[in-house]
Figure (cartoon, rainbow, N blue to C red):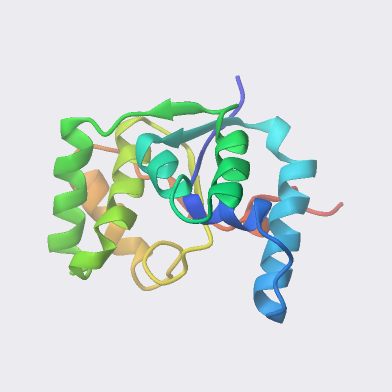
Length: 159
């Protein structure tokens, strides 16, 4: 059985976007494509109805590309336990209200037993200060948290 990965919206966006002129963003896009090409087959991929909704926004042509990528994944719903856990994450981790979608990504992954949450959101998700708090709130709610990471962190180690 393959390990499970929840693909958050930033990953799909970086995978399908035109090459950025910003050096850091361009490197992240490259790393995302490298993970997609080399490692995605090693995992069972999931997204959520929230990811689909976020990916469908914006330029219709770009949205269509993002939705094509998401079409091959299992789509998880926002169940009541995920909504409750997200609310708890906002309150107990003291995330700003605008971070509710970020908390919901974590909660959907946690309540569905997903092993990894792949994202480029370093403000609220792959954040070394917030990660222990997020993990504690998930466990306190009765759920094992996903390992929140970026694509290069989920690459196979070099021999």
